[in-house]
Amino acid sequence: MTRQHYLLKDVARILKVKSYRIAYALSVGLVEEPQLRISNKRVFQAEDVERLAAHFKVELDGKSEEAHSSHSRGD
Image 1: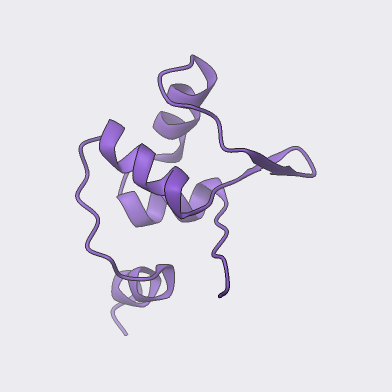
Image 2: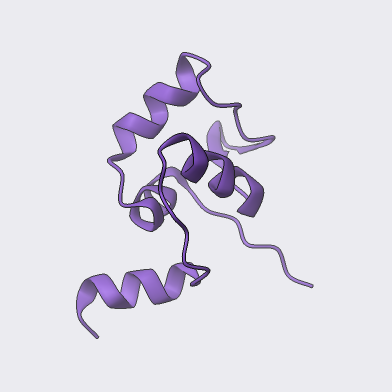
């Protein structure tokens, strides 16, 4: 089983929320920080994305990140 990892910009694209809003919610403690950091960058896993979606009241449709990015490009 492979595990998906996302950076802040990927999560923002998936949730259709500006990245600065996510960063603010994390920095002031409104949402728990993701467990993983690589090179001092937050690395989000599926459960982190779900937690952020609940905080921002965004409904996830179960599509992968690739589907979101291809949809936004109009492919």
